Length: 119
Image (cartoon, rainbow, N blue to C red; front, side):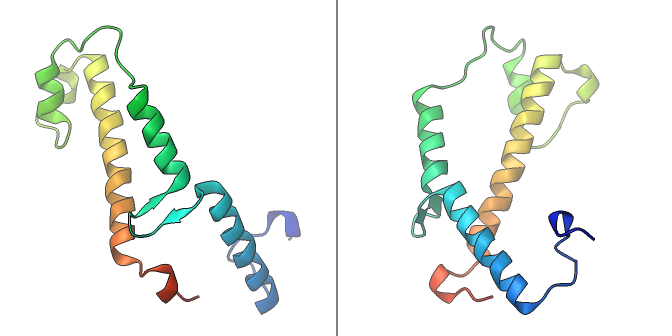
């Protein structure tokens, strides 16, 4: 197998695993920015959230039935076939974002702080 396309499950030496970990660690630090461990936050994510709060996304036209969105945004109560397409799309987007948030929050809650993390 070409080294260019190796899998994380490919055989590797201890040195290769160490180098791969260091490379990935450097990537995550560049990608997420500074870690604010007490706040359970990253500099890049914090900046993106601020940008969204400073420039909120708004629909050009309001939802046809806002109550349908609020009734279904956490747990689907209505038959999706009965919802207008925009409400259905917004509900799906919210559900996806909430699912991501729950996963990230769960990870922050179970992972020890960096000082107590070991490979």
